[in-house]
Image: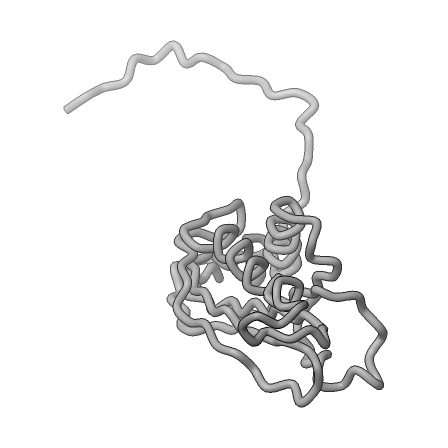
Length: 170
């Protein structure tokens, strides 16, 4: 992983490549609890959050990171989930979307991470008509963001001279 932006973009692209049913993918900033003051967004929406669980220095300012990835799935609906309700099927679409997200992430690896596995699943209270679930995953990554960025240069000419002296081995 070169930077956190690359990781977020890779995860967002993985979700959107698997389904077009999720209409909004963003970083998590607790948007669903401030719907009146946030920029409006369509639902279903997936929000990604990252937190470091543990780091190990491996040298040259590179760290091996055990990372927690939270995926918040928000589905705004007034449909009823109770058994035999006339709109139960549309109310339960978010469960299918949770399965899609789990199929995307659990057991996956990418260019910027490896060893992704689900470690948690929980409903979140929104206080409104939306369904919000948090799916928690852990993964491993190498964080190179603190390393020195070297510029690339092209060499015009390299001259190598062959030595006429034989190497002496003792």
